[in-house]
Length: 453
Image (cartoon, rainbow, N blue to C red; front, side, top):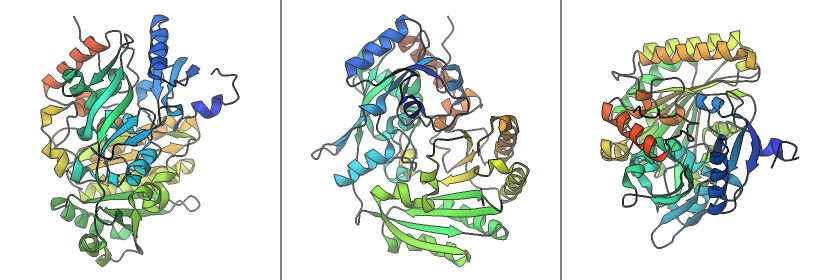
């Protein structure tokens, strides 16, 4: 497909135009052999190429992928096949979270996935893959048992604990750097009794902020594996007044979930609505559909992020005040939000730190995301300056000694923040890069530098 094709704009539309890649040709491979042929061609003519699924990535390195060949895996590799005997799902490289959730639910299974239905499963998993079930079953990478990968030299290989185990280590946490993932085998689990999640939608006023975050810290300290909650700050599109919303999800019965939601209700929210959503509908209905709405493909968006141990209430109050001032000064950026994602981490921390390239297992209580959304690119500097300042302000009171960032959300932080501060980690990744992608063709997302010498 070429730019003069009538479907070009639809096929190449991305979640964000911010620092976006550009393409001169799109290939929609129907077979693994097609992927191999496309990679061989691009390498032979020294042409940049990028494999895509959900088109949701926003790493600044994508800006260097220009006039490239797009491998659109979503066209033919969007399958999820669940084996009824083993419970293992065969997931195509173009499958999104909504598709996998539907397929596993239909088979009576569930698995950790993110909360945004339009994001590619494999793409999210290569950087770790967090989600509401991670306290029970770990990250996406913790349940990935095999990857089928096409390397820059045109070979297609199986990557697992027994085949190319060195690469399997690197693919789980830094996988965008080594090859095109054709498909993955992912372990799933039986649906929890009732096949539903207990969901509570709560609204609070600004003067309740301190009470809310004191309670959040109390629950984080004793958080059960089944519980996650998101604290959103947004703005009313008309009045620009602050919107302060909490989405509370308990992966279990309503009776058990109410033990944890009762203290929130006692705070006196202006809204407190309970529901029990089937697992296959949660990604669309939770947070009043706010998360699903983030899938819109228009405007300029990105995310600045960092991991936190707990909330510093004074810092949080200052951040919210700064956010409100920013929106009033830049009303066209009123779709920008802050989402403070609170996850359980029992199953994540149970996996040995050195078993994958994912480095931040002990630093995942809270993933704070600052996500600007605006339509005028002239605002980019103003937006970025505010976002960086907000992230840096949070960093001063995260409860961690160093900056820790989820790799899929990496922006302009030091490599060590998302690949690990232990020197051996980056050394091992650089050696893998030199072995499997010595010419740096896979450098479009959180790139690992090629080792010197």
